[in-house]
Length: 157
Image (cartoon, rainbow, N blue to C red; front, side, top):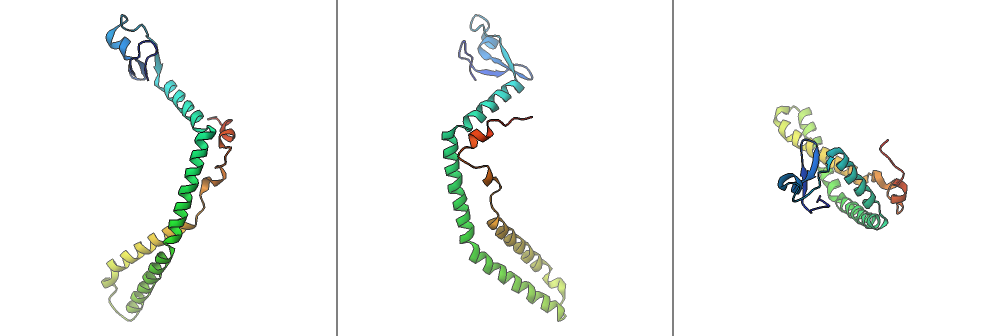
């Protein structure tokens, strides 16, 4: 922020206010602007300005194009990795089954604790990855070309 009178920076002037640094540091001969603004008022104005600018049709069009491109890339990478993930998951399940058979035949289970923990963690990670790959984006219903018009009436109330 800059002062409209002298062009100096606005900076903290007290605990919760901002003021002209030229007026504050160099005195009224340099700048007569003694106006300050509360931080909560400043934050509200900045957020309102950002919201208005971000909801312009041109900005939204660029965002929607980028979002669609990234979503397509993520879907493709999830699909591309599916065969390897499925094969690894099948192999882990096979190894777990072999350990269970060995334990049922009388092999000491304590021999397999660390190994089984690693396999179970990897199995969980693969299942979570597969789950993420099939989930649809939650925000899809909001992402329309007229998003700016739809959100114009929204408020914090």
